[in-house]
Image: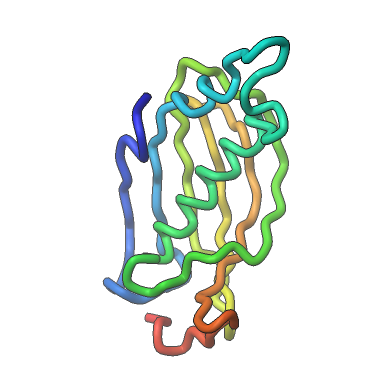
Length: 145
């Protein structure tokens, strides 16, 4: 099973800062999805995790954190997410998650996300991320570019 993203592309205006319009694309194999769908007796291993939902959601969240340059800004904690599932996953085609920062608030960043396989839309939605320190969302002024 392949682990992690196959490839990550970023379009960031200022290194270590977040800006409206910053983008990221994450390419992910479907190996984890296939594993969760393997049977163990009568039920798939991941039955209680809802693989058809959690895999595209997870990749979308990952793309959002990449757009926020999480390794330099610390903006990586999911605060909220809304999404629509448009199509089921094809277990043989790479998933591509696209993320673009749309709004930077005092303590949160809102990121539009899409997950596709080839040109077929799997998921679209919005991810809200925060930077947490000592169990509190932190102000982002120092990280705004």
